[in-house]
Length: 160
Image 1 (cartoon, rainbow, N blue to C red):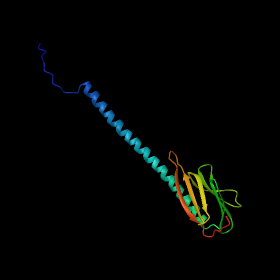
Image 2 (cartoon, rainbow, N blue to C red; image 1 turned 30 degrees about the horizontal axis):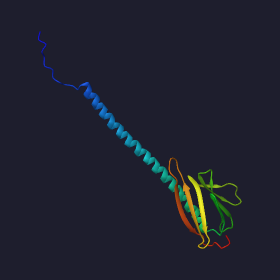
Image 3 (cartoon, one colour; image 1 turned 135 degrees about the vertical axis):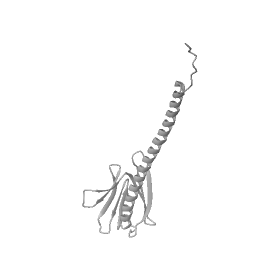
């Protein structure tokens, strides 16, 4: 019997297969890492957009009422009180450290305006009858977002 056969190479060796699998795993891990970072970035962007939208809605509501105010009563930490044209006392305040609420005098219950608001700061400039209001918001896993506006109170007198 003649055992001198010539073997032709028709498959991959174990080392070639292992190197191929290792390269494939490295490529898949890189793709997964990029995908995960993209999803995290998108989620943070969505949360920041929601906070910004909440702040704008709250600021629009507050500035519209404050612009028509008859009298500015008090500005404090996280609240502002003023009288409207019907002589009702309106209070905007932060409730539960994340919600902008509105209360009308004579009504014990307050009405939530928007969520994700953690701060309400205001400053009154007597010379120009301007109230500068800053709302600060924060969403889940986001940095604080601030929006500021100056509101001219048209009917405000100098007795503040």
